[in-house]
Image 1 (cartoon, rainbow, N blue to C red):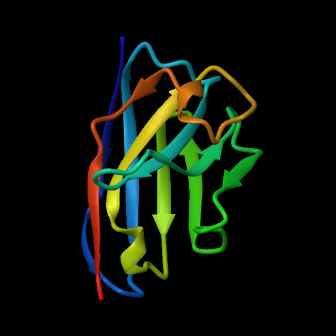
Image 2: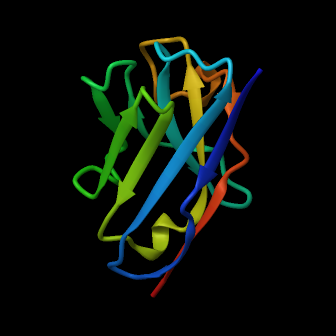
Length: 124
């Protein structure tokens, strides 16, 4: 049973930065790809970023490209999301997730394990 726990969310002003982290416990497969998604009330879960098993390939939604950076530490079974130049429209609950798949990493249905989420609020 894989258990994912996000941390690092909070309230930040427009233009500010936050760093989200996700730690895995249990039987975590270090060869899995990992992703970050976000969701606002009444909306579908939205892809933010993903990283393959060895960190060599990263993928970003157009809306965050150039502002967010995903990284992972396989020795510690963690994945992070550095967010800069935050905007009010980035406000959402952010989730980390893992998947054994290596393609179509922007699709929530490809992910098999999810964290509980952490709230990010960007004030204008």
